[in-house]
Length: 302
Length: 297
Image (cartoon, rainbow over the protein chains, first blue to last red):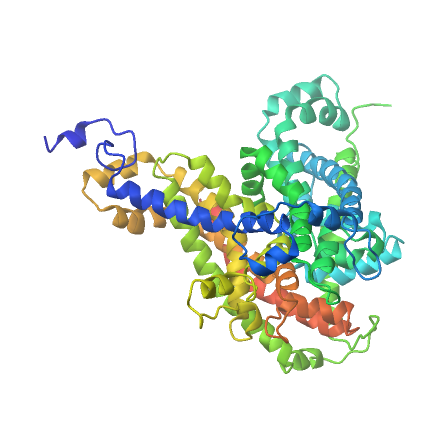
């Protein structure tokens, strides 16, 4: 029977007939994956557990032990009372700032990038490729190189320090990857549709609004996921381009946790940390495969 | 008049050109213009505001004789080399394990990838807490009876960068795994069958057939990690604020501090130009391979 292995239709890439569940190979695979999974999951667990304990319990116990007495006080405090400097409104302000930054930034950047991608895919004009190449290269240039020139530009047009200035910055730095994303997607739409619409007399905007957008809803969802997580998690631009009263959540979180004065309240800090991570985490867990698709698209630039 | 006149070349595709104005402005003014501007002004002695007093390479000489910058570069090189190696190895091994037609693949993948959804600030703060010597891992191991156990990377200047590396790897390897997995799935099943028929051991198949076939994926990932490493900033700010002392400073933080807190603009410009240079060293050979290769086909 030695040759039966070669003649049998193989469904899996390799391995002998999958019979025993507890083979050495399986123990190795599941064991390794299990251990690594524990390592990856542990910080989230520690965050949640710590945020539900009172300070006395934290000082006595270890960070992995589940809370004996569950308290939601740290969450309330992190949301409504935690201090940054003299301001003691808690993270709620940062949260609403982030929302006010997020909504226009995501909308504007996606609208502009999708139109760019559409123009690049279907209405190629002379010189378009040059700008597109610069744009893609720009995705790799360290932001630090462009930080100050943008400060000057924003100051000149009177937006430095304002919310809309930050919206513009997010639009600019989100453009390379989003434009690429949309361009590639629009290129894959059959050209016959485009030509038929032209024959029927539709123009640039007509085709975009009536054909391209309705046919590309999945890619819009991917772009939204990409932008929401990216902008929500941004720290550098928030710190550079806004005034303290407009600081997004990440900046405020860092200021709360790393402030030097006062007694460190680790449970409040962890509650604040989870609160800040909640939006991208929720998107991640609910969107599943689309998130993976979004970051894979974001990853394979150029 | 005759309507079928040939339209003006400039007005052809006018809507498309108007629609592309944001892109053209971004590419030319911000990306190209901003980069050139920063490089040019790194040769001045700008302090609080940019000014055109040229001083040649003074800023660069000062940069490379500043201890803080040298430490930043050293940290970035250690962090960069190790995070490159570890994220490629761990990412590939995890992807290869997930590719064995196992159960709960989605669950495992979800767990490995979720840190990538979190910001560097959140990552840094969590690991600051876990590595806290008073309450974290050190105190737990000591509580188990090993009283002399010491693990306090965030408070030890010699190893602080490894503490940051742990957090960075936790956040980023999931993405590498997903890319590698996509690469592995893209490989023809027949290759595996052929290798099996020939009796080639699994590790040899990986080492001599699969990995060489996945070269494009590896190169893309490499460029991606490298570009990300240079940007390393938020993680350090959140986890250690550059401390203890200046032991965990990184170039991006040096640049930010020079420009926005120390009113030493030109130093920041010089530092960021060096960062740009290091990215170009990676990027240009890659672009040459990638796009030069396509033309030949």
